[in-house]
Length: 261
Image 1 (cartoon, helix red, strand yellow):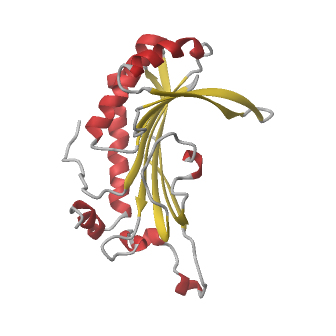
Image 2 (image 1 turned 90 degrees about the horizontal axis):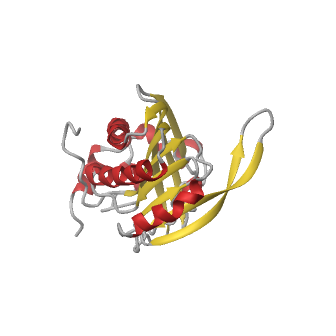
């Protein structure tokens, strides 16, 4: 499936990768959770928690309701599986290469296929979050290409600026969103991902950093065939890689490729 070698960076800024598969709601999902939890526990996903989430229902009237999600994580909290009655997510804060990532994803999808007997999927998503910080004397903003940096303080005659950049692109597969957000402090994840159960081991800093958030989404209807769904994730992955390489400078790639001192 891979057409060129993966981009392996010794000091990669990548802090979170997640894949989501949505399907038609399974109202009895709770009944399957004990069996799923036992199977995942035997595969090193021994940490478990049930949570309530707010769900927004769109229609003639917008309504909200409480739903449940079940979280299964490894003991070190570097990998997690999030399950609701209409989607599953596999996420990791210790990404290696896409082959390793999709092997775990295929295991999760196969477990759902065998246990819940899901018929089809209707949305696929692949998301990468990079935390870009100053490194080797190069400021975070200078690791991004000029067209992603935004306007500077001096451009506007301002004492301080915080940049928010968004590109929405239509690909042959769906929609690709590329966001670059400048920030500082303890909050280093996009707001909608702030409740993740993963551990990142990141020390907060007051120095400005950039979040590069790439989200590729495909909608349709596909048989719930784990291997075929993973192949489609590979297709999404190709465009996400292009987006990353288009957003950062070649110099940044070389800096991240080398081992630290």
